[in-house]
Length: 391
Image (cartoon, rainbow, N blue to C red; front, side):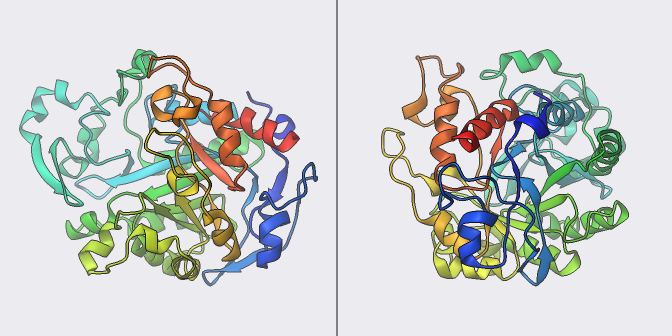
């Protein structure tokens, strides 16, 4: 699917100036009248001390690590396919090398996403580390120079579920973030419109403790490639609020705070002694605090619609309404087509790796008024979004 402008959702501004406007026209939430035409072209909003506008369709389809449902994640092949399918934004996760370069990997542990185990010259690099309180054994990007990482090739992370993706094992190397920025600029010129990126700082407190802070080198690249402004085609994200706070002081690029399970605690909170957990952050006061420096939240889908003990969806929470009332956009994560990842209501058959009723699940989530969604399968998400906006 490449007819993004023709068959995708209508373009509308995500963030407006007031809570009433946010609830309907600017955010395109469920408060808008059924069948109403998409809203367009409102003034930039004020939030977190910056003026900004995200000129993106609603619902926004975010290619999760590219198209990780079809290609090994965080490769130029995965990013290119996401763009060709029509994804509105494409995600990168950033971790550092030993010599300070930012590369695109979901985790610094590259055991499952590269062929490093097949390189005898790196056998001695296998080690056990504690990352954000979790003990991990494997190979880690911070123990390799960029030149060494470039000798590795990317592999499928979950081959048991996505056996077809293993066809592409070894085809692509680990990209640097600067290479992705260059790719996005080239594709933007070729297509005549900017390529939007969604960039996550991974384990920023952990890396800062190693002398490999992520924010400063990231900001240098954003400024070098003119993606540091309030209306630049890029969104910053992190599970650590302090990382988004730090970035908000350095650039005007919109920032999103990622939110995991309700009972979990951001790692920077653990380190600083902040007692709050995610359940506190999704309350009105927590959302007000987030809105003082960020422009959105990226909650897990379970914070939007919880599941019962059988894995079936229950009633939506008030998070969408409460976040919109604070001027925050919501981009929850992650929709995948396979049964094993879907709510029990939408699973089909007994094969966990088979596709379930992903379209039905998308409709349930879109109906809550979310502004976009991360998906491993952007083509499915785009069709579902077009169905939703056409109702």
